[in-house]
Length: 77
Image (cartoon, rainbow, N blue to C red; front, top):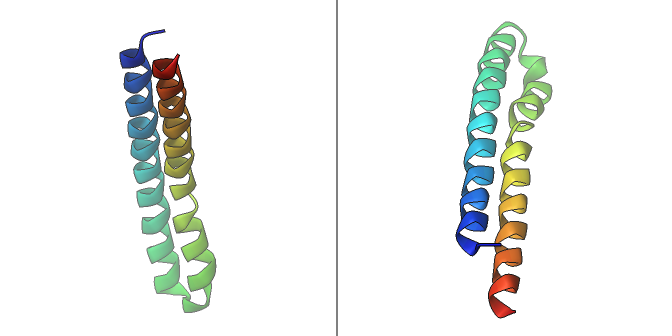
């Protein structure tokens, strides 16, 4: 397997996961701001829901690191 294709896959993994995370985080944060404006006791709950989509970017980063480690293992062989 070509190392360049693996590097491209790692870039796509982190790029698409970050894009999806940014869209989800923007939607959740805008809804949270509206809810907190009405009732301030919801701040901690809404903050949790606003941060939750960030895990998608973290998962994409982990997949990219696994792919890069696999590519380095191929170079060693």
